[in-house]
Length: 65
Image (cartoon, rainbow, N blue to C red; front, side):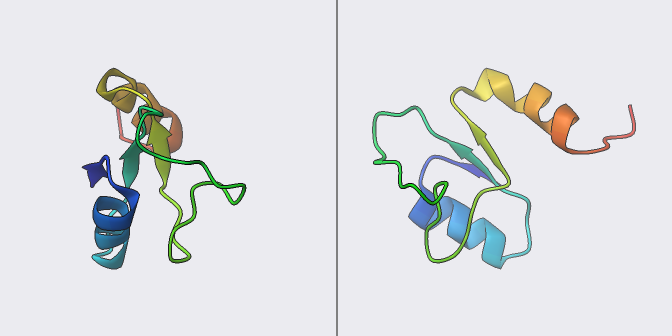
């Protein structure tokens, strides 16, 4: 699940059992000292642009390429 809303997209994706990526442009969120934790849920990946997603996924997961 890729989303720009931690409280909606990331929490929902995590509760559904999906890996999550927070698209955080830095414009809408106040960063907490707990590493973007909301309701005890931290995104698996944090990216600042959708163009970062393929590289972040390759680094974090064995995609079999």
